[in-house]
Length: 236
Ligand SMILES: Nc1ncnc2c1ncn2[C@@H]1O[C@H](COP(=O)(O)OP(=O)(O)O)[C@@H](O)[C@H]1O
Ligand SMILES: [Mg+2]
Image (cartoon, rainbow, N blue to C red; front, side, top):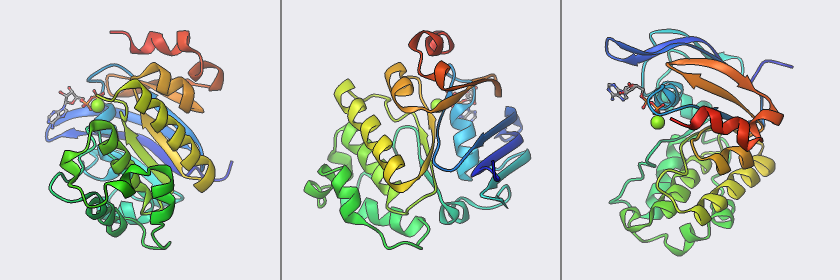
């Protein structure tokens, strides 16, 4: 394998003096969909925030396509191709759908021309509701907007934190289908945090198990697509 798209080594970090990440190692190749699974509070969101550049690492390194981004700001990382979709979605509620997408355009790489038609093709609701305030959308629609906002910047890696949270099952299926299609058609790699069994087994190519701030197991394709296998890491 040539150098991984994302290579995380010995990553430590957290909030102020509190260390949550205890030395995380993981790798993603271009075009892969990789899930990080684990129970509540083990540090999955802290890891995603640290990868996006919103939390400063205490130690270790993060490399993106051969570039050391460990010390770079969130906006520099976004321009290098990390598209972050936070847990809870975090769309700008007072801005319109269209304005939210424009924020993603500014935050993204700015290399490719923003392809609104493509995003509208995946998520037609974002065209239909373009002039509506994002805060008036349902949870599922806001999740589609958050994904669209990241994708409009043409990222190389989508960092997707619990997209299924608080969303009804039919929409979860939709989201899984669209993320898979975006991956196939644009080549974007996906690092996915999830607790929803259906979404994990239907979407991920392989996975990592996180416990107490560490990666404790790597799951191959046979394991990540087995409901019985994945379930044991999710039950409380
Ligand atoms: N903003 C914060 N300030 C301080 N501690 C936090 C903050 N957010 C999360 N934590 C703590 O970090 C730990 C990991 O949380 P988190 O990364 O959100 O876990 P997960 O996403 O796996 O549920 C928990 O002990 C949590 O209480
Ligand atoms: Mg979380």
